[in-house]
Image 1 (cartoon, helix red, strand yellow):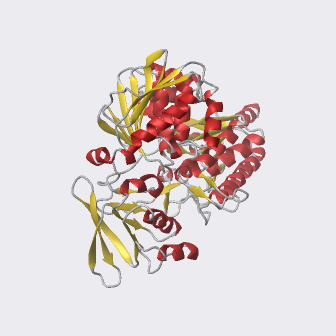
Image 2: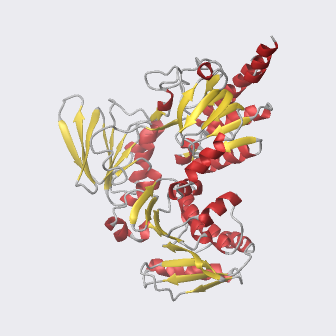
Image 3: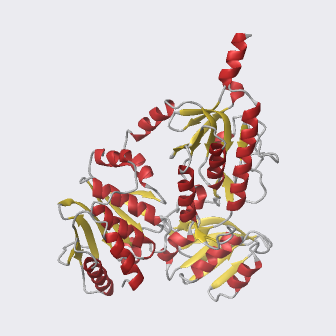
Length: 532
């Protein structure tokens, strides 16, 4: 089950346990149960602080709980074998149950312990999902630090009938007290924000107490992190307010064009960005969705950004790096069947469609890469492209054409996603040359048609936007508003790439620096006026 290298690494981790833990398994006679028994036996053999028993009576088999020997109420349950992307989650669960402190603030731990009410979480994941570990680890943290919170973390491939019955067609999928509660990537802060009714008000109160920044960066992706680091290095008081640290990079799997790094993955890069930001005196504020920009020309002093929670922050200079999100098809059935067959992440949700027929909408690099990945999992892939030819790189085009279970349809306009009320059962498209309408019977639709900038909140600010919603910038990353700069995928920069966003963020920061040293602060202007 575990090779020699994994055993050695795990043995070192288990040496960090501060108190004994117990593994209690509920097993059947199937192969997965045998794998679970072998895994738990190997773990318990690596440390005298770990014991494993196999007399559990949970209905889900195989499954096992991890709990502190001194506190049977502090436990988390894994159903299935948590290897692949979830092996790290398993290791962290063992460490946290054994008293090793998690890498979260005391404030977060106190918020978890203060939760009132009973929370029974059930969460479905796939072993190939790069978005799932954050959710698994967050729920594990809650369950091991609050006896009124339980978490059962279920590997969907091991419980296919249950997945079908509950209509789970996208992971991560979280049920709370028996009802569907949330889907998609969430960290512990995001989960706490949803379950803790007072969290928003406390966050707003903290923001209101902050003094104006010299530079405030809105957005926490590659452009935002780069901008914040550059202005902090110049000695300016810098804040970075983001809806999600890491931005869209968190939803990216393989990255092979980040120069000097032959291969990395989005979540790893996002973590590295956040850690680099923490090396500087930067006030990092997460889970903040910007709602309105009030320029300095209207406030008579500082630029002001108002957030959805009602709080606001002020700054002498702003750098807008709000990025972009996946573009929706905008056809009937898409919204109704989202997470019920309509998906946007082939890496996360592909395994749930094993042996089924799916479509991929979009013939660019992302669409063709998705079709190639899915063709190795599903029964059949139909790739549908609006244009008269695929726009992907030739190497991807050639690979796609070599696969025997893929059909490519070009000059096709998707007009509707259909379903039976519970899940997708097909789609309709119009042949753009003949005008004829066609229908394809299938169980899944993966949408890969590009990006739309996150700039709706800027429409009434006086900031110039293109008809596509991109922020107009010049060669210095400056907008039409003095002291407001922008960078990354939300702007008119012609190519949307991680490495370009980082460079643009640095450029915007240097332009902000130049602006600040040439303009006096509002307080200095007021003092000069009084003296005159």
